[in-house]
Every structure is written in structure tokens, then in C-alpha cells.
Length: 253
Image (cartoon, rainbow, N blue to C red):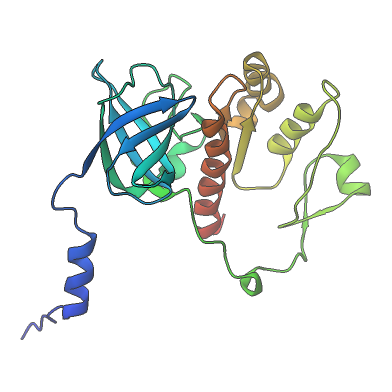
């Protein structure tokens, strides 16, 4: 019995070499204006995540949002405390990625995909980039099958279809969260990915414990970015939820 091993082509070897980081690339913070950090380097692309080493020993994640001449402009994915001129900026060479997988079911994550429910780490999981290419318009399925929400008023009078986008618009305190919790508990979806962006802190806990409940949380993943968090984190929360939903879509859920 002979074993044949196919040698990699030059093009494959070149792609592998270009994708391999042989050394770390650094820059230094030159100034901070508002929420924007300006640094001299490193060599990075818009959307890349960099790590800023503060003088307190912490490492803060920041995203490249633009350039001013030869300077790199970054926005922090968290608090700015401890960042000053001269801090080291390390390029990761990749965009923001978030954890995905069935181990996330029943968990509450922050806007960057990190657990915030005090239940420990997420266990074994894959990662997905938050900036994915949307599927071709002609490859999308047509809306043909009804989606059972478990809410009789909707299923009987305002029937929804699988794949349909729906907006729920109403004033404060009239039941949007309650209705969302009912659909999450009684709907026929395999997995619920729920993004709560800009909510007040107390409303977040009320929704999880009262509206969603243990029954709904069991097959849900909740991503939260409250109103007191930085604007970039609130924006990333929507991308994080979308990336997690795309993973389950790709698995056929």
C-alpha cells in the first residue's frame, strides 16, 4: 500500500506565509481627544483591533476607525482610564471576533461577546468575525412558511413568515419587552438571539427575569449593551448579535 502526499503549490505556500505573523507590530499613543486615540503606528487596517497597554498594567482593546496623515485613529472598546501619551499600541492583525456555539445558550453576554452573568467562562466555542459578507440576494430563501410566535393575536391576525423582518414600535412602558419575551418563550424558533442595546440597567434585569424567564432564556442568547456604556460598545453589540445569529443560520437553525 503506497501513500501519496501532494506537495503544496507555491501559491498556497505564499498565502500561508502572508497570513502568518512572524513578529508583533507596535505603535505609541501620541494624544487622546475625547474618545478618539491617536497613535504613531502600528500598521493596521480600518476595522482591525489593537491592544493598548496602559501604565496601570491593563490591556484595552481599541478599533481602528480611520487615519490622519500617518497617524492611526482608534476608539476604545471600553473605558479610557489609564491611557496616556506614550502607551504601547499592539496590532492584532485581525478584526473583532466573537464566540459562537451551543455553549452560549442560556447565557447573557456584553456588547463584545464576553459573559456578564457570573456563570463562568463559555467553555469550548468557535469564533466568528463581526464583519461578515452578507449572502447573495439571489441565494436567500423566499418567505413561504408561516412562523408560529405562540401569541394568538399575532398568529391569527398578523401572521408572520419565516425570514420576515418585523418592527415593533410603541412608547415607553406599554409592553414591547413583554411581547418580545412572549415570542421568545412560546415561538417555534430553535434558538433566540436577543440584542438589548441602549436599555437602562434595571430594565435589563427585569426583562431577563420577568419577561424572558428561565423557559425563554434556556434556548436564548442575550447580548446587552446598556445606555451607560460607550457608544462604540453599543454599536458593536448589534454586530455581535448578528454574528452569533449568522453562525446558527449557517448551522441550519
